[in-house]
Each structure stands twice: as C-alpha cells, then as structure tokens.
Length: 192
Image (tube, rainbow, N blue to C red; front, top):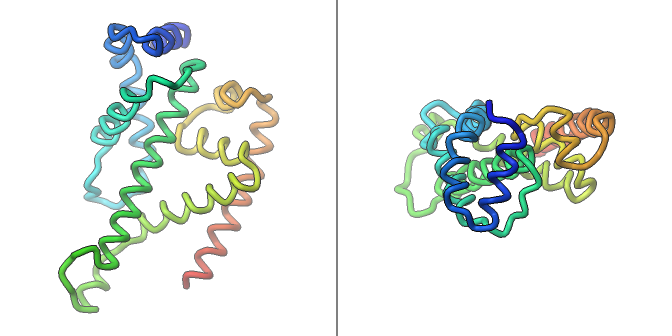
C-alpha cells in the first residue's frame, strides 16, 4: 500500500500538469479503485453490463479530464472517485429505466415483461434520489454516506476529507442512515 504522502504528492504534481505523475499514480491507486468499484457493483444484478474493471476505466477517463480539481490528499481522490462511480452507475440505471419505458425498444408482452427484474437498478436510483434529498437538507450528512458507503473511507478518512472530527462523522453516519432507511421505506410504500 503506497503511503498517503506519496499519493498526495503525485496528485498535486498531476494537477500542475506533470504527466509522469499520472503514470506513477495510476498503479498506486488502481487496486483501491477496483475495491471501491467492486463495493459499488456488489448490489447490482448478476450479469450487469458494467463490471468493476470497466467502472474503474470509466472513472479513470473522467479523472484524466478533471485537471481543475485541487486534490487535497489521497482520501479526497478516493472520495471523488467513489462519487464518479456512483454517478456512472446511477446514470446507467436511469438509462436502463428509460429503455424499459420504451426508448425505441421493441414491444413485449406482459408475460415477458414480468420475467425482467429491475430491482437492483431501481434500488440504486431510489438511493440516489434519497441522497439528493438528504443533500438538500444536510449536505454534510449526505457526503458522509457517500464517502463511507460508496467510497469505503474509514471514519478518520471521512473526517479528514470533510474537515470535521471523527465523532461528528460517527454522529452524522448514524443519523443519515436512519434518515435514509426511513426515506427509502417511504419511497417503497409510495411505489407499491
């Protein structure tokens, strides 16, 4: 595992335009990015078109174009990467929902449609909607969920990224989880 200092230094050098820094950075962060992608993909349906490696590649392509980010440190990099992964998966799920509502697809009978399960994509979209609602009420709590759940950051890393105490992260984490559970269960009841 590379040191936090090494990754931070390479991120800062990359931001200033040092292409060699990016070449050195990529192998240092790839394994952790792949673990984050696997965590994000864990709730997806079997046979999902995107796989963890493809998700990492998509994030990498987006990060290469993001030179304007002023990287704080390693934790900030992984937090942004996790956020990008979430957005990619949600966009993919939403586009699948569009396709299921028509989107130029051929007509199918009701019997055929019943055999198609949309649960994982629907859950991801519902979670994303709930996180957006939480962000409107309390942005920090939404960020805590994003960093811990999607990014897999520890309490200490999350505190570092958000510049708050670890105790604050623990409180926000507990309250946000309860809020999200309530919001998701209400959304399920509305949808039923």
